[in-house]
Length: 366
Image (cartoon, rainbow, N blue to C red; front, side, top):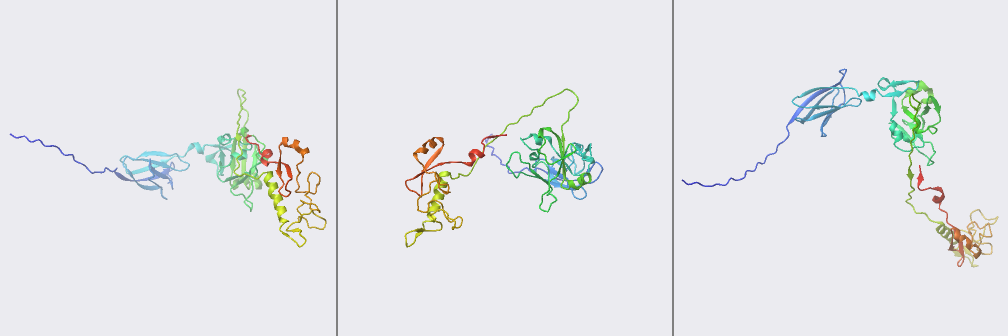
């Protein structure tokens, strides 16, 4: 008997396993059986999805074994596994957390949001505690749909301008009525953000039924915190912020200003010479006289051609102080000297003042 030894050759399988697809249909209604139009049906973990039609029905191709996420504004989102079913009847229930939110009404008392027909936006209390605000209106920026907050001044105590839904004036202005604890106020600048218990914004025309024509631009209702029964407590909340000034521009200093301004005025009066050898130009070397139009002279020289000295002559508008030895004590007080560009050999003494040095405090503490 002859036994032959053979080697097994590897076998390569070129196959691609694809996830099986299934077509599903369904109907989405509320708890009263009414069809919900535009409900979102999305395959969990993917961008594959659709929305319900006018009859609340949908049709979607998904992976077998997928999970459907069904959602709609004001209703609780449901997660439904596909399994072996091909048709789904989905009932969405209202989101009780939103509909049972208590809002303050303008005519006194409180009301459930689900029973309100007016357009009222309730500002979350966390909005007022996220940052440091000198005015509660600053915290409303981006917190209420349709409310525009304009900060037109850099003054820390400036009151922002509130415009709700474009305002009713022809120029798009018109601020809402401010009511704090039932009393009409000019603005929100006289209330501490930490003292606010709740804040509601009435945005529709229904506010005029309560407050009249004054509420044509909307109403901001503010309710402050009140004392409660029980143990007495003292709460302290402190926040500190630092604001640093950052300038992207480098400005000229007093030396540059004196050099270029004095040179420009001097050169504008030394453009050409007449037959007598006198310099002529767009300005006059001499000081102004009663017969000259205002602004024609440069006030650098007197009638005899001598350079005016700001130490002695108050008519030398552009003639800053000439440096002399008796002014040397000023050099120790921040003053500086420079060569006079219109009077060679003479030095000027000046003090450089930067606006930001006494107008901007960096860092500024909030």
